[in-house]
Image 1 (spheres, helix red, strand yellow):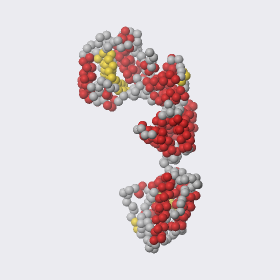
Image 2 (tube, rainbow, N blue to C red):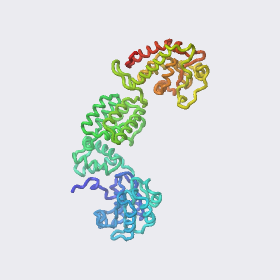
Image 3 (cartoon, rainbow, N blue to C red):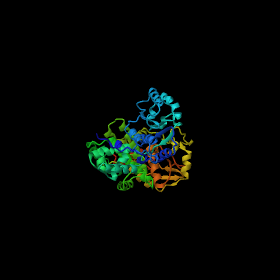
Image 4 (spheres, rainbow, N blue to C red):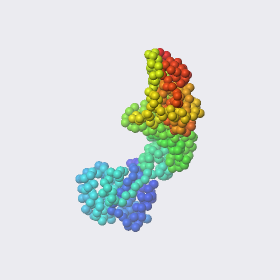
Length: 559
């Protein structure tokens, strides 16, 4: 009968254990010097060698002819423990034998001395699954067992063990095996099995195994069942991965913000029965590497990739900023969680990729890009336009209704920044205008880069640009004061508009500013019957806004 690779190639000595020298060397030294403890606790993630080392230790401590702390593997004790004909080594699965009755049966066995070996060794796997009552029953015996008894407890979740158990054991933490160590071991085993494994495929399996040698051997076994010559394509076809070719192509489409190309790739992968959760996981791993390359100068040991893959990653990373890579990772991980809960996986993957294409280089989701002239506007842009038009209509109704002369349309003019959050108190006002704003305006100087800010705003928020295009801005310390009328003030109250302007000013001038209206002393706060900052009536101002909106590619219907 065929024996799977992880069982066939389970280490027989400490020297065969991969990636745990801090554990194996200590255990060997204890055996050589005779300083063997009565209870050990082996912790670590799955497939890192906990149970394997426990069995090697059980053989070594009873071996008739140990070799440098290792079992000889030839004496009758070693052979008997290996083929389980000697009953002095007992392995218990605490996941299925977790009750107090099971521990009582174990304690009953402890009363009997070894039949053939020197020690009775009890290996309790997944010990964290024991009940509280079972732990309490084990506690006293674990602290003071008979001289011929050794306990070896193994667990993946040591934090679930009572402190009273932890304090009675020598603890050894097993680390995840490094990708290169896994790759080297897999290549050796593949050669011994009459096959061949290349470096790229070995590192790919190591990434999938996440530091677990048992998982890596299972994947190699599966891949060699498909072909004795295992390469990256073989691994991808075996486990249902999209592969580096598709992932690189998708990353390039994300860099170019091309959702149409991404949708075609998703359709192709879905038709080939690729798992969308696995695809999302691949993209998360890929953009993690992009994020590291964008932020860390020396990434040795942080990215698991061959030289060719690393070169491609560096070329791709040059097309991203760290902020954008982080925002992409946030979206992908949120989508991964949703897909795991059972929603439509393909739709969720497509939605995530479309959102990713809209992330600007600064990482902050921006307004939708301007639509080409003659093309229908997006729903978000339409909603923004409807809001603007409703405000324009409100102004026109006030003009037609004939407001009294001199009555201000805006009773409060706050600074638009961190003080405008709900609950914050506005500065004391005088004559309908904040005295603080007037004082700032009197000492302000013309902001020279305002035209560049408007160019950026035209790309990120065309609706706001259509209102603010002909304005001027002044700077006083950390305050940026914009020369706008009442409608412009209303526009500046919008959080999205404020954030867009502040981000652009920060990028262009390096100023972390707060926004407000430019209102120097002596300036008259215009009303519905007075001229606005552009010298237009609200009606003509509305016409100008609609004209600019149409130039920006926004469809506008005149009522």
